[in-house]
Image (cartoon, rainbow, N blue to C red; front, side, top):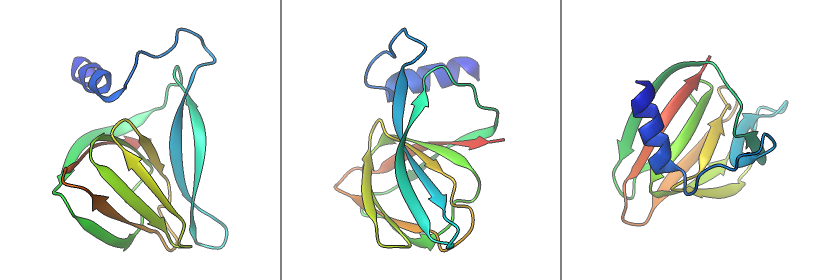
Length: 131
């Protein structure tokens, strides 16, 4: 499993991570605010951070797929391996992710978010469920 994850992540990232401890990777953080609405903020994840995980799985959605308002099923990192996806928060804020982007989906309650797959590619993603 360890070698599979390393292989998968090496295909996912555009470039080799810098060799400094301060290096970070930008991610999209989707979370529930005190008003029960979902919000998105861009944050930086340190390359060398270690996070306990519960499980890992892959999922594919065909081109032009949509998913109406819902919550993240659990606290996940979602690594986009293929596709371009537009997300909309419960407040109407939109943002787009594509191959190489990481979404930290933490809006497990509240009013949720929705998404639509743009273009002709499927959305291939890896879910890493955090402990």
